[in-house]
Length: 151
Image (tube, rainbow, N blue to C red):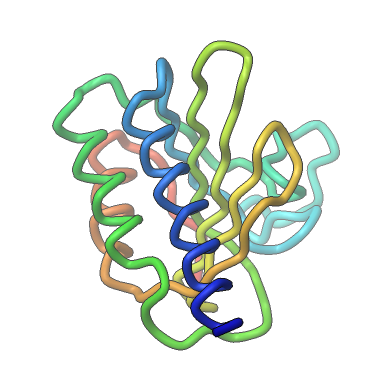
């Protein structure tokens, strides 16, 4: 009985985030360095670099095309709760959705098989995910001429 309650609570929060992402006024896709506080891409720690949850931002793009936005959102949410996750979290991708004065972010780690959601900077959910959306995320970053984190 307790497992069902926990699963329903997780599903409810995930469904809420999906709805928020779909109806956001602004949707931003990030390419981030998976290493906290430094970038192997740049070869050094850059204290002036933009950060996304303590990860250096390598590039970002505001997604304005509604089809592209919906495709990314569906790929992300269809992969949640699936797969096997590791205990680490070294995200190479991030998403920020903004609606009014509220922001919901996701740090996405395909390598570790998990994602973390934040509402106005406060972590609200950590969940497993499959790697199914990874190539789509990478293709989208490349399409917009953004760098990918090195493996």
